[in-house]
Length: 484
Image (cartoon, rainbow, N blue to C red; front, side, top):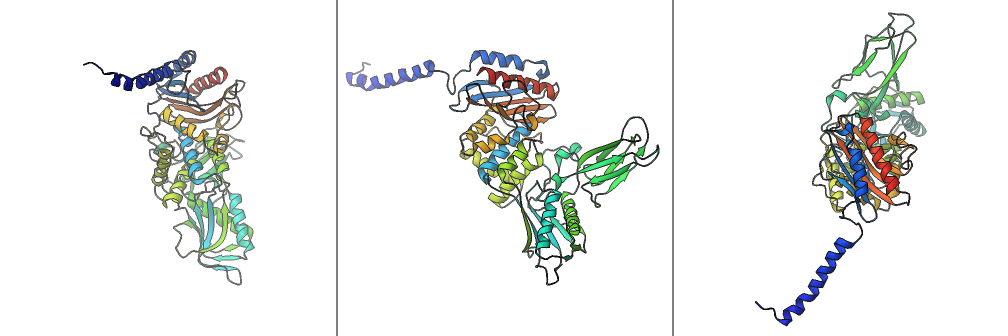
């Protein structure tokens, strides 16, 4: 069929547009979606061929923040366990949804104020609302508030209420074999001392003497059973707690003159908080007639006797990311659920997180996160999703808060001993992540010309040690900082 002159004129502009488009794609400098620089790819490929990673699976993605220029990718769409890189999502969501000035609150309540003699008839409730940073000194300050209001005696009990975060006090997929470890403290709306207690054992004066055991903070409600004895040439004193019990067990031997200690997640952190508050009240001079225990606050308990606020969220994020605090990360997700959906559960908070991710255009269809801290082995992300999150945060006005919350290579947090003496030192702000056979590092790096890049390195099923995997990560990041 012959084409008429009219048809030819109509198609000509389209052909010009098509040619210009093809030329732009193939002749333009490297940009988003373009092929990565081959020399950088070859160098990173060599690092990833390390024996410590043989048989494992690694996902890597590196992009320039300003325009998304691709630097390197390897298995970037493979779902992998992030370990504590999950906290990048938790803290970003907390900052975006709650705001940098948000503060957690803890209140002391009663059914009625003190009478003319300073006596409160009935129970006093220590009601937690998500703050996982409360320490015994904060309880002293709240006791001081009661004293300032004229409270001199409490004719009732001290009740701890941690039900702002109801339901399962552990993350989904956590293993029973580490639930007494300090990094796996139970997750409640009321926590003191991070839900952890220090158990100290001290040898007696002579072989055969019982080992002396003490607790810090000092409490009486935590049951202990000790069969440990003084003796031997080497310490083999074991301090444990069964995952489903509150009883602390001390066994073995401790040579004369030696001590040992360990931090253990307590079996009932809400009652621990109530007991410590009772002790703070008594120390201040307030007579407390009742005992300390945990329960749900009665609806009628509306008299506010004291209020304590956490540090603002911008500081809370530093306390979460730099040391990689699991309890604080979990509390952030549950607080999102409590504030936005009226229910302080992980599920409610995670749903609100996902809404924000989708609103920001983050494709998370390959992302599955079962807890807020990354302890769970049911967490899965892709390197591409992590980098997408990091780029979204880099475009926000509150990015400095997020950026400053991350560990700095060679300076602080979980990166304080890594990449010292390299170009990466002080130029990398990133989150570490480690669980069994998993080691990850994701965050931001700044090059010599002050250009900001995002990167995610997710290493799973590694046969070597975590330190060997971290060594490879250090090499990759330092190389990028030096050569980009």
